[in-house]
Length: 121
Image (cartoon, rainbow, N blue to C red; front, side):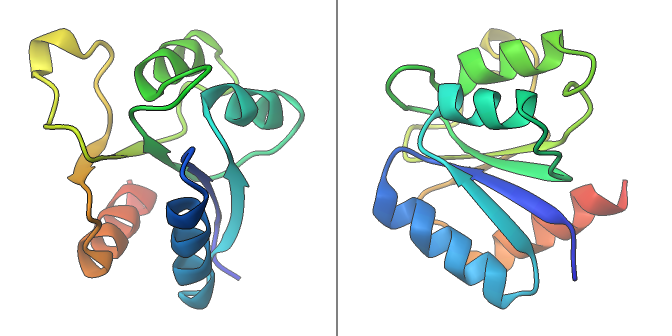
């Protein structure tokens, strides 16, 4: 079995579609409805090798999630691939930077290649 991935997106259709596609590729996939849900799962013991994260979500969006993630030494080194329908954020406004940024609609081969590249680091 391949590594565990965490897919975080408030749109259930996107979240479930990504989870199903990644599962078919051999990954073990957990999901979260937003950044707060993801943090609770991570702090509860879930330890994915990579996070696929939507940027715009209620309760706790992608940027706020990432800030909290890197502030926690136990979670800081988990790579994050951002997926968003929003334009790519300016590099100087995104601190800390994400490991990769992909625009919606997601191109599955591009997502898979990005995941594999980050997992090899």
